[in-house]
Image 1: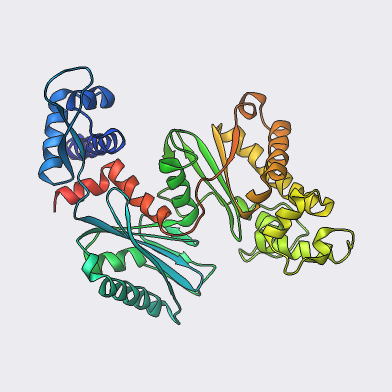
Image 2 (image 1 turned 180 degrees about the horizontal axis):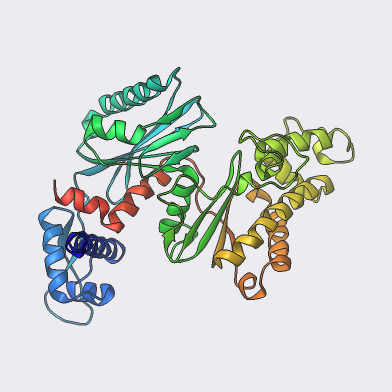
Length: 406
């Protein structure tokens, strides 16, 4: 058995080391080979071999840079060679699809949103392919060497098999989107839940950068969480995000689309909050909300920030309910940061203390005292979350190996 496992083990080490070297060059380039060896803790001979392979594949290149510790000619370092490499990012929304064309340095070349509709399962796949073909046709003058496709959507998915099991937006079941696009294009295809991809983006470029342990909570139409522990995404290759939105908080509450009753999402999901705001505002003529039309989350936050008691109580209640769930997660994952991605961030001076209070009361002091609650840096719009899947696959070495093999 060891004879069979050993080659796979060696291949995994090679992939990991290549990804590590590429990531360090991306983060610190231009960087010398000596500095690269020190930061990666790989032998100079290994650095020489890996960088030569990456140069031959046109994934990195040599570049002169001034070395302040020496006089004379500039030192020769390494940096990412993104010229000619492109990837397609796709975001599937309710009633629309967003396309983004980016290079390996994550520079956005084109991004556009198109209306999207279909009828049956096969029609869904055909419509997606038609939209991709139309996008390429419209922008053929900008296309270079396409390397991969990444897709995000709010759905129950299996990233490993590239299957969308079900979607809150479309009447589809077990759609093999990843496999279908890979067979049609021959390109590596990555599929992930929007919340998971958003959390990865925040850890790479945003509010979670340089943190090893993060919990990101999304309070929107959907309620969910992404967890990064020891630098690795929890459930990244599994069927879903951390589905805190479908934790029962009110046994006598509303029926949820998941089939259960009184889920957290039925209480603190944005649509449900607005229903509550409308109902309560009608009975509170002394509230600022009483005379506002239309009532939106922005107007709710503005009223709360102006000291309106009803608006403040509604947001405080959301914070308490989220905080109780977060207290459990803090005890389990001991995060450095909790990121909040929500339209309710407009009243974070009310929302965050309510969350923090519950965490302080219900979780271990050694864990709760060091947690920092901050807003996400990015909105969950556009194709940056999908782009983060490509960056992650480069850093892991997975996509690099495929590109180096041609």
